[in-house]
Length: 507
Image (cartoon, rainbow, N blue to C red):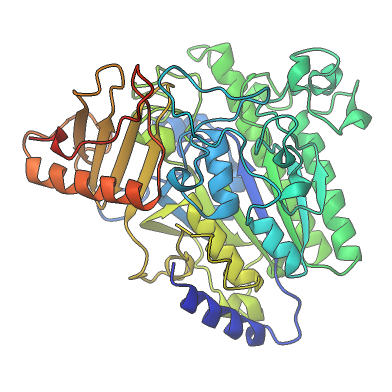
């Protein structure tokens, strides 16, 4: 992103709102929620009209519908394929190839696999990193973390979100999933997976308070405290839902009695609806406090769906998209993103300066890295950034008001040099084209590539590399250039030597 433009924007922002406080920000992050895990239709036809698919009729998310009616939802918004890389990208504005948190972080230590890179950033983020909450706190915001962290392993500084710029941390630690969602189980401390017990919620232990509800209550209490202190706040409400275990939220199971779905799939659906209730509770609370018109909400998933519907490479959990969390396909990285003012009001000075269309769908490509500069500009956080910190994100404000942004690239890099549902690959999207490069570290002289046109084949069922070799070679060169620019780390072969992408992989 052009930092000169950002600096100019910050100067203008200082005069836009006059004496009004800076806007509050709610970043509502849902774990493992893909773009199809909702009753809101995000995907569109060729004319930009929303298209409903069977999964949109299975899930019930009326509060997401409410938020979408108030703002802009993105039909092509991308995150990294698994949790920790996305969270690092969200906080730094950098893609995974650059910050090198390229895999999920194992709390107990380095989870490098046989061919994984030795120099990947398994230690995650730390106290010296430039992060969004740190910048917002320096700009006068009360920065509140509630829920899942998963930024660093046990014993490392980023284990505690307060070392990353959050003034307040509730229930965040190294763990990437809850030991249990049930208050009766102490969220894993009393029963369940004790090593993944959610910390800091002891007052709910032994009650029937579902984890999603407990986090929501804690978040609203923190908002009350910030409002009472007359401080603008940044609330990072990061739900453990909808990560496994897919325990049933009994408040909503009556809505999911179709036995053609497995019990796990029905449990997953209750987690989705419980998360949606939380969103509505937050929106209602902002209204009750009289601050909704001065609060921006960013709703976001952190990677593709992990719904227990079909295999990792099938058209199932994200149908009509192929794949799921951890795969190289669209179902692994396409996530829901809605951005809206909590109460649209064109009389509000901040909303006049940063208008957001209501009930609109943007078909532009957006990425999780874009949240960093978008919120930095809105908040008036200090610019420019340190020279050593390079951003890969772009401003979304043009898209939010319905305009084009000539500086925003229509590209997305997904670099995953590890073993998972999709293994040792880099995917590069540019416009409608998507190239997937497989390093094959066990046979490094024989890499493989596939090519898809997502406009014509959104389900990625037809590899058209043989029909379009020149396009594939161009995309491969672009991908390699981008990886070099990011100083990426790569898989290694059986001798421990890095396996670099080969320009001659497509002949």
